[in-house]
Length: 196
Image (cartoon, rainbow, N blue to C red; front, top):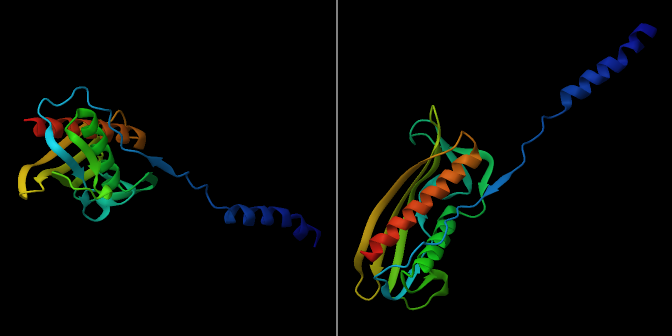
């Protein structure tokens, strides 16, 4: 009996240890951010330019960050890593801020203001993901952006902008930095196309 009671603390410790769950990683939240334009457009649009939130298919428009290890055929959502807002709204907000700083039109506004605009930007996020590589990961961003004349419903500009920016390492932080660099590149090219 005494012998059986001496094993009781050991058995209790084993049972408690078996019931303990591993610690859960803390959630992380990231923003897509572009710096203001370095210079103003030489030929801005006459009138107000409005931008709607971009469209996106399925998981591309959701808040968890996406990861692929096979060139984008299979996507996985990152656990515990999220965008602060839906990418469709976040990229649109950065687009508005960038085009304002570039002087792309008399005024550049989000569509929620519901004002009579001369031009409208519509777009879709095709890709927004971290792509794993042997040596380094990539931040891959692909946006389809169009400018439409609201008075005539004429298409002024429509292009697909694709960029692949190298990440410093395999971390989520490095992937987000690469995606921010990619967003900067796409916005700069889009503004240049409006100016052409």
